[in-house]
Image (cartoon, rainbow, N blue to C red; front, side, top):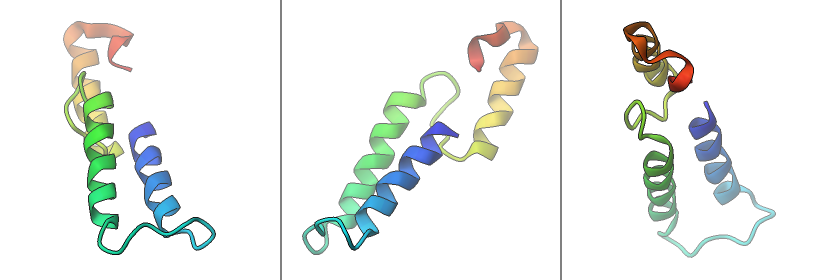
Length: 72
C-alpha cells in the first residue's frame, strides 16, 4: 500500500499545474524511475509488487508458511 501511495504521489506531482513542469518527454522517464526506485527499496521481501492486491498474497502465504509477523 505504501509503494502504491508513493507512486501515486509522484505521478500526481508531475501532473500538478502548480508545480514547475518537467521538460517535454521527460514525464515517462521520471515515472519509470519512480517505479524502479520504489521496487528496489520496497520489493525485497515479497517481490516487486506495487499493486496491493498482488502484494498481499505472497505476504499471506509467507505468514502461513511460518515466517510470522516479519512479512508485514
